[in-house]
Figure 1 (cartoon, rainbow, N blue to C red):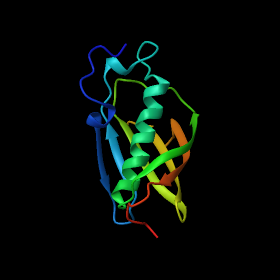
Figure 2: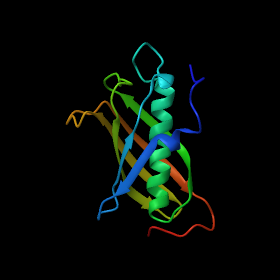
Figure 3: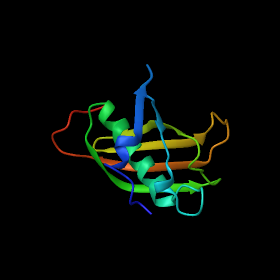
Figure 4: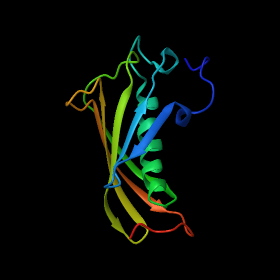
Length: 129
């Protein structure tokens, strides 16, 4: 299934931040990432979300690791068009950061996948607070 993939998931992810600190990203899919014919593998989807959330923290100067990741798969994601992802830090308490993510395709207003996560700050990284 993954034979033709060079590098890691992050190499296929383009991100930017708006003036409110919200991460927006685009992930370019390819057939190597499919599970069922034409459908993005759920494990790849979760990796994209987790990587995007970590990059959202890094954009705020925080290094963190995933403590919990809850994903809701609403609609199948195809490998034929890029994914659009948005991540936002929703809460922070000392060493704990809560992040939400929403994934769509083709500039759709409907979500294909949503996620919530808790990340723990790695000691020594700068803070968001």
